[in-house]
Amino acid sequence: MCAPISELEQEELLEKLEVFKIKGRDKHGRKILRIIGKFFPARLITVEVLKKYLEERVFPKLGKRKFAVLYVHTDVQRSENLPGISALRSIYDAIPTNVKENLEAFYFIHPGLQARLFLATLGRFLFNAGLYGKLKYISRVDFLWEHVRRNEVEIPEFVFDHDEDLEYRPMMDYGLESDHARLYGGAPTMDSPVTTYSMRCIS
Image 1 (cartoon, one colour):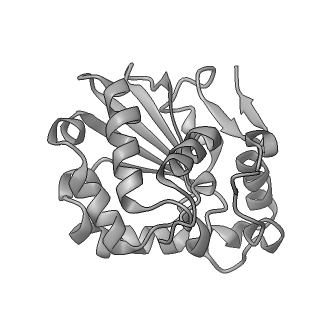
Image 2: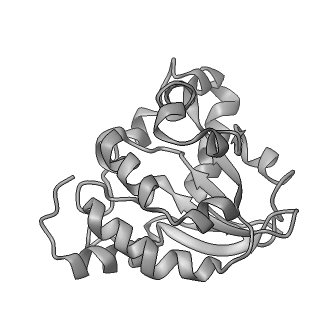
């Protein structure tokens, strides 16, 4: 990852885009750390800044209680939104032991075939078996509400749009067809308002 902007600007960008947000609970009463993959500007954020941001602004808010991660993989572009494999390993290794132990569930929305294959192969070596065992793949938003309290979590509108696409183009689930119109859209920048992506909170 390269970073043409200062560390402070990187932190402000992460905050502005709300890549990480703690809000709501799942049906076991656990806090939810929501991560929107499409919002993460991988080309602009260094590994060290990301680790510092998590350590100072995210992990303390989780406290010492059990929690769950809700990761939205919808429309993620490998070149724009994903750090490299070595970066992922470095970030994972930097997570405090107590945080790893308190993570009890990892809800993964719209994983796609490539993500499933990656996690089933390299993922087992990059992350410990305990984390892999906590993964719960969610292929449709409707299935998420079996695990999460639906009136407490905000989901971007484009995630619901993707669900609708899957109803008409089910082969997208298996990586055999892609949504080119959105898949190759621009990644967020410093000048991109957060409101670019509308949210829906289901009640």
